[in-house]
Image (tube, rainbow over all chains, first blue to last red; front, side):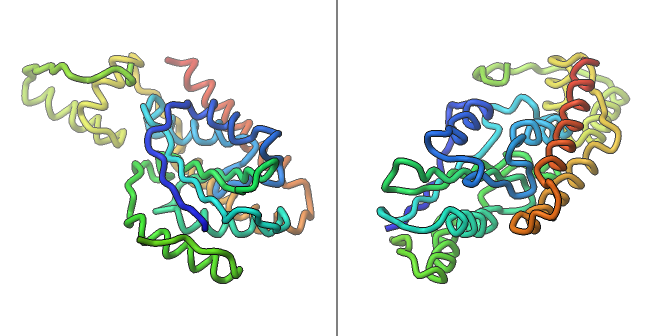
Length: 154
Length: 99
């Protein structure tokens, strides 16, 4: 089954998280994408937005969401990227920078980490707009369109 | 400093005029009064990036637009993105240098 998980208050700084997400043993440039952000310089662009809105010393400068595909999935990286990007748009509650990193190397559970800037491009702080159930349903619509295993909703 | 537990309070008396000024200034920067005063305490001054907010939005929209051409690399998209990001980094460094 597929899994969608919201991860609160990760102790890593944004730079540490970026290093982890872009680990060449887990992904490569083809597996990294941005929504409204340069994936190669995501940290700099996230920091700039926070600086402009005087939020440069936030305790939790980002939100992490992880989407995991069902195990033993065989899809091209281009297709994985397309699906993960579509899911990324669903996870955006409003206009804010999103970095996506698909960890697909050396794993049976391909998954995508999403980092959402805690500060939106209008300066608004992150608020989870809908319930987790809502997001799972929206993600399931995408998965169904690709005939992929959906997330179990309790 | 922001990672420390905030369990202490400061109550202070100000004049009507001072209160109005502080509230007005905080509003100008899109901050709550407490955030504004704490920011000043840490940074000594509030530096304004001229059109910074518009720049953030413009770069965001541009990055979105460039995504549409990812599958059709008609020119080195990543280089264009990097030029913009490096410019932002330069502005941020200048801003921090003034603190």
